[in-house]
Image (cartoon, rainbow, N blue to C red):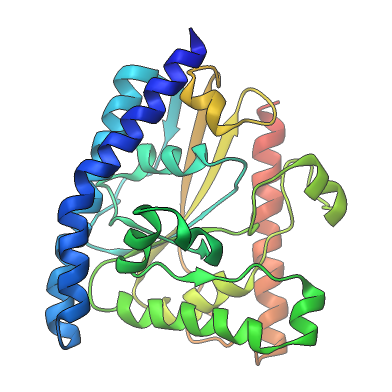
Length: 290
């Protein structure tokens, strides 16, 4: 029965995507041929509206079909008319839907840091491109040391997103670990955290350095699954068990905006200390949920 439930869930996700693909592709074509940033910004508002509806229907069938056992703790004072930075741990694709369950229509639609390879996902990849998600490479430290231009491309993509984000309220989501947690990755990293991979500070630091004065806050999200090693398929089958999403609102420290993580070693060290302390606190939260 759970396999049938999973297949129906997958079918609902695909049908919802195909329905919205028609107006989506129309607006993408308009955006490509529209001259000038002001006019393209109007088309982008239409794309945002389509994304809102796509997300909304997904959340509707998740609530009524999967009926997850979900507890959400979030702060007051959130607004879709402000700028936010969302930092979260990452274990499975289910995390994306849990973030949407917690924050949809309470803050602007998400702009995720996306791995460059995911642009090839049919329809969805094109939508991410049109919605101006930053596409990032996934490089090893050895590759970046051998070719520093790889890191520069990612920094330029982040800078473009931050410049465009000044046009309208934006929520930038970042899975700071850079990849999903698995036991193998945890062991390979020799992570000092029980439940987390090491946080990658560069992208987060760049966003706050460029956009910090506009941010209304940093939303620190900890996603807790009652069953170990959660999977998206198990979630679609309705077998994931209890899930808790804890959202904390943090003020942007006064020293962060305007800083240059990549050129100022003192700022870099201070920022790394800050994000490591954030991850230590997140790890304790996950420990308490064991």
